[in-house]
Amino acid sequence: MISACRFRARQFIHVRHRIGLIALAIVCTAPLDVGARDSKDWIVLENCRLIPNPANDGDSFHASAGAREYIFRLYMVDAPETDAMNPARLVEQAKYFAITVPQAIEVGQAAKDFTREKLSEPFTVFTRMSDAMGHSKLERFYAFVQTKDGDLGEQLVRNGLARNYGFKAVPPGLRNSGLEVEKLQQFEDEAKQERIGGWAANAGRLNVHAQKPAPFSVFVAEKNTRPRTLPLANTFHRIAAPLPSPSTPTVGSVEPQRSHVKETIELGQIDINKATEKELKMIPGIGPVMAGRIIAARPFRSADDLKKVNGIGDKKYAKIRPYFQ
Image (cartoon, rainbow, N blue to C red; front, side, top):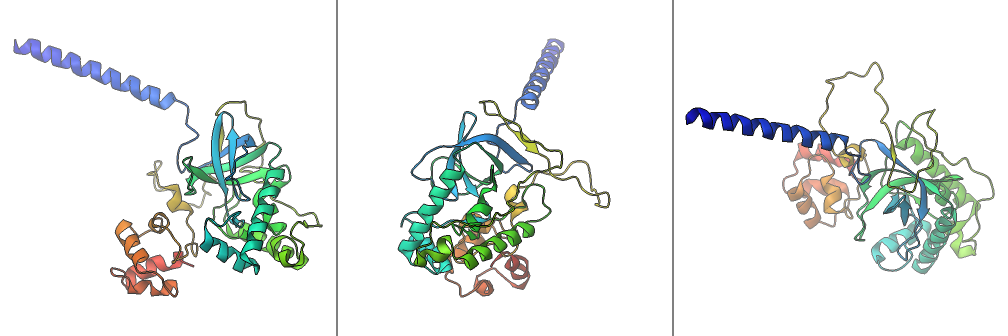
């Protein structure tokens, strides 16, 4: 009797092991979902099309990639709001351009029209599916968007319809985000000098565009990377992260997965008085409890007042302070 029970137990274990292997094989061979969050590599969505939506504006819009719909938010640039739903942000944007709030809304509408025109033809999206924290039920992801003329964000800034401001990331093919920040700043300075877009809303030059051709970026990961036309299906290809140089030490062949958000956050990026709890938790050393304390202690005269928050001593302050503006 005992032998029979042992035999059946071994059979059960063997069957369960085979089921486990089959399940593992199914998982490993299943196609990757483009909705995978915070991908380490760039996901390239080609032949995208703009979807008309009342919520679209200059730097955020609905788009289709094959049979799927997404909302994308441009990296590193910020176009003014198109309405007064977020008054605090609108006031900040108006102050940046040195114009009135109603004029800032006009600039936002002009940016929306500019983006709609530029995206009237198929375009390419570079994204890592990093959450852009929108208010829509449909998730919104940060992205670089490339039209036939080049990077859309650069075009907005060069024409005075957006500012060099926003969530940063290292563009595909570049070594750091600083190069792109410098280029955007150059475009912003040129728009100011030419008094176009938002920089000349007071002078009635809101819809005057840049007269000189500009070398807008065309982002690629590798020199041999070529665009491909996607079929009408939810398909994509990835741009692999650059391989480490021979001098880069390698600890092991397998690395633990890390959050993309943790990887892309850069120094001087967070506004201490406006950061959300989610943004604060991106900073190494700040968890939900500490994020809550920081929010409760607002407003701060500057990020230097972080030392006044309970639980932030000299050591923690030195660790987190560089991440704030």
